[in-house]
Amino acid sequence: MTTLFIRYPAKASIDSGAAQACPFALVGDGGNVLQQGASPLGSLADMVASARRVTLLLAAPDVTLLRVSVPPLSPARLKAALPALVEEHILGDPADCVLAVGPAQDGGAERTVAVAQRAWLEVLVKALQAQGAHSIALLPAQLCLPLQPGAVSAALCTTDGGSELTLRQSQTDGLGLALPAQPEAVLQTLRALAGDSPVTLYLPGAELRRYETLAASQPAGQATITLQEDQWAHWIAAARTAAPDLAAAVGASGTAARQWQRWRWPLRLAVLALAVNVAGMNIEWLRMKREAGQVHQTIQQIFKAAYPNESMLDPVAQMRQHIAAAQADNGALAGDEFGALSAAFGEALGSLPNKNIVASLEYRERALQVKIKPNTVDAAAMGQIRAALAARKLDLSEAAPGVWKIRVGTGSKA
Image (cartoon, rainbow, N blue to C red):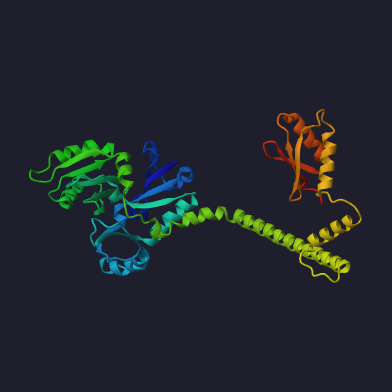
């Protein structure tokens, strides 16, 4: 899984009509840079679609960071109150701006609010979504610079239209300026903004030697400017903890919604299949319920026709009792009577060479209990008797060592 970092040029340089290339870096989960370069945003479609997340570093001149006193409100209420809280700090209508609030610092009431032009960010988000972006983060570039305590960090990006100076003064403060491509003017502006704080200025490798000569000739008493070559490792490390993220405020969550669009028809088909199966199960259940009602009604009619003067509680059990009583009246033995069980057991004993194995017989609870003489029957003989009884629809179980219980099988009728 990879993350694509893109540093987007300032809107002013884009509006000037100059062709702008966006520095980019494709980064692995471990923070290693897999690929880097510079290319127009429209030429990064393959990497945008393949990356798990796209982090767009917005040019510092396009994002204003405000420190606003925020009352303790729930996230939903704070979102609704933000336009009123920043109205006096911005020019124009807050409805035309994207407002994103950062986390509270040290429990204080002041929080950082990032302000950017809504129409501009929507164009960028739609362009990334059209290229297949799975997840989008929009971060102010000034908060993605590495920062040393008590120092100021700055980065200079040279474009066809001039230079972009990005400045980070603290954990939550930063700004950006569009300047002419004049190194003397850049250093002078940087010294004026940094004050007495030491400055670390990150420069492209091609500009490093040129600025080293100018920085060495700085007047005494001014803040020290340390020059370093600009590398993606600086931006990536700081961007992992940068906040606020303007993506949610601009509606980049629509990326997730767009991803759901791919599953719209499969989900609809799944819901339709589930509805068809549920409907089929209910129809089958209703059919079986109707058949069960018809069978029960038929049983009741047969029972009433055979025994009109008897109250009906359990028709099936009552009919079985009547059939057994009728068979007994005619001299027939029921399958679970003592005579029938003992006769069947005697016939099963006929298959054994030693038939003198019975110590006693006892009839209890419609089952025949047979106590076996010690050391007269082995496992093979017991299996032979069990098979012979099973052929007569009787079950043989060992209730205790040396005690057999013979009863009518569960699948046979009494």
